[in-house]
Image 1 (cartoon, rainbow, N blue to C red):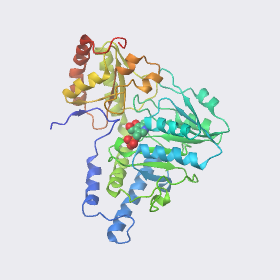
Image 2: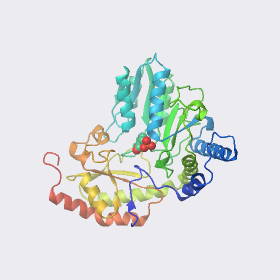
Image 3: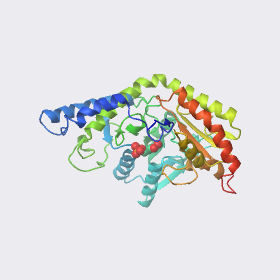
Image 4: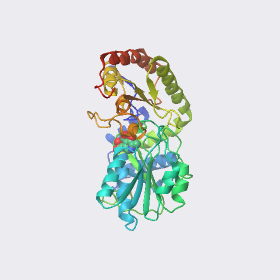
Length: 387
Ligand code: PLP
């Protein structure tokens, strides 16, 4: 199969070759259980220690503050359930309308369990109103949960300002860092957040790996009760090959942060091309701070899904912002929260680049995108009333 042009890196990323190479011995000969006392077990245990140090270095935290997880969703579940159980006297939580479905599902779970949840809105550029955040906080507020970067638009929330408001009131701050880690610098030594989750497959690590930072002193009930692994915070035999790959990917991501400007330059050139060559197109969140790799574009009068399918036929992988779950043709809740009409929210396409994206990749896309949009517009694919 010819390798497609891959511009869907916010969904998942290719595994870095270095990560794969590092994992292979642990899938073959060095298969010991990290909990075993013999040589093979100690090799695995040592590899997990190194992986934890590498991830901690990328986050700017102590290795002991890191619990390995299966990815972003598990970290989010751990954070919400853990804080809910640990602070029964505080039954109010705050989050935002543009969070990933994993956080929004936990907000529903909190309500089902008797908690009160405030959902903050955003402006037309996807930005939070900090005064509104401040006004939402009260003595019963247990935790504020915000994403570092939005998976659809790439818009960054101002974590330092948010932390200053939240922490001065003795409230816990959880950050869903899934789309930020590896794209922008994160330094938990300086940023006073209490919980921060991330996912390895978003920065060229293996799927099914990730972690949750729990600041020293924060004691939550274990997410999974079992054999006492992860210092009793998550039972279950460690995914040693996965964690080895995660650690290498974290180290590489840290080293490549300095060259994020190259990804940004590619993204910006793509946006300039689209705005110049495709009338009736808009970049969502363009005036806000964004991660360097993401561009969410609305094309008037076309369905994002139709653009996706045409580009797929041309060997180009992109995403619609409209739904994380394949086959679901719903208007993007993020764009709706930003005030987009149903047509705009349906007519959006997300291009997400990585350090592996080349100029040739973008030339391939630029060679067919204007014609695809024009053709779809001439066919009038968007249902009447949504154009
Ligand atoms: N949070 C955000 C912002 C995401 O983009 C994603 C995945 O797309 C998740 C959480 C869930 O992460 P995972 O796929 O590792 O469970």
